[in-house]
Length: 142
Image 1: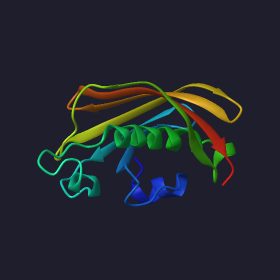
Image 2: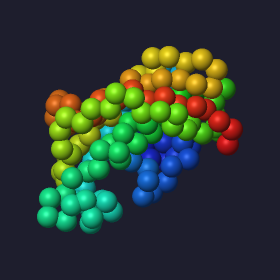
Image 3: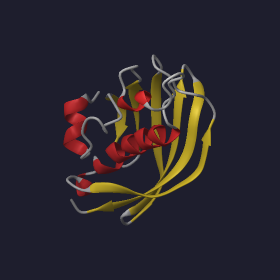
Image 4: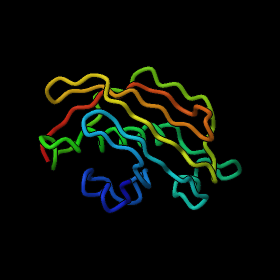
């Protein structure tokens, strides 16, 4: 299991944009499973939406990408590099994510060639799918 400090050693994201709290499973270059406890104190709830707080879907996709980045940047040859978005494909938003939810974030690297790769990602709350997407990334230098 990786906590915040270990995650920060792998990816460059920092508070308030580090959107994962822990990594429970990790197979470098293959995939990872992480979690985000969604608190009412999250900065984005002040404006999205004050009367009905909902986590923005793009931030859930970003959290999924961060889990995928942990997986791909854990490979020895990628240490110290950054994974950038290349594309977000087939994103489907199925369920609202609200304060008190715990997001389970799964990303499996399904294709990788050189610095380019594709991850199959899924975010769930209590076993129900909130977001599914295919994420394309490019690994660049630090």
